[in-house]
Length: 263
Length: 273
Image (tube, rainbow over all chains, first blue to last red; front, side, top):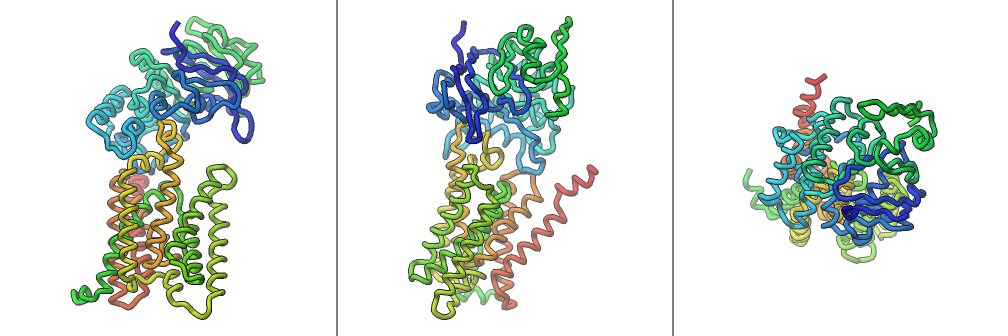
């Protein structure tokens, strides 16, 4: 058993407005691919913020690379690549693909210093990894939603992270592009030995790829391999709705009542 | 034509125009991209209140202008970050509070003070050597700071949360940016005036925004428009005996509308439709 990279021990996470997640205990080993699933407002993003050290627990502890939240310094954060939830990039924001990905290097370059040849090389390789190196000089706003997500993933990769946090990377993108993004993440997971936390509310796209699924809604309901946790009882408890779960040869398929109409 | 350059007041005015035009447009790029326009307007009124208090009590108007504009910018930034009040609401409060203070301080003065009104409407042709040194030294400080932290400012402007997650001290840098904005406003106050300084910050950057998809190029375009507009404004003001602040702002705004008309971004969008 590899040592955990991320360890939540009875952690409660709160904002000034109220508690977002209660008493989470979760241990994530190096190289795991974890799908984090739950309805909107269930605390999925909060979980990622705690890992990034942007939000420290009010009770319990969160340890990342064996550092507590308050001690999670810049060089540790640089080891965590993060793709924030994005409605869509402002298409008129003046920035090119190259400039966007180079931002992933800024934490490592440090204040008052300029990018070196090594940084430029890492930007190039990150763009090759997501197959966007041809568009290196394109304005970010000219790309499609899926291409922009690839570039933003490249920005996270340029950090040379060990952990990759992806917050709803497939929301607002058409279905074929969603699958290509997930296949890309899965390939990066295998080839770069990255620990992946993939937040989504779409159970079916993620379940074939994830080693384990964490189901959350204000607390951690269940965590385990998809075949164990994706069952009718647990899912209807989380969503508070009718849930249909079918198991076929290709995998598990879940339909959640009229969830999207109320989201 | 060249005889005007033999007047020392014209030499000073033109040097001031170049520095202020450059400074305002560089800071303006961040202001436009980070939606700080209104906070800048509030800050310039606060700076004016500082100037009036300085004249009233006989303390350096520039020092008090810096104090007033910095405390306004920081308070508004703080309230917004703590989630107490949205930036535009708190700016609105400070905008009118500081203007009320300015009116009060002017009312308490004995008689009419033409210099105070100079700070309200701007008089670049009356910039003296002492003013020019302030403009040069503080201006150099602001530009060097922007140069030193350029990549971090670029990052927090594009995506502040992401910048924090990467380990960049985004909160401190965003307050540093507000500080630079406040100082820029104070430096420009005498030349363009509290009411008009804001146009010189927002308009060249907004014009440059129409013209390019690269932030680096946006800086160069904004600087060209800002410097061209303020130098051109000084010349118009000299030739036609116009109020300098108004001439600068009208010229820069004319350039802005030209940029909108000839914007490659908009042309492309029309083609897509």
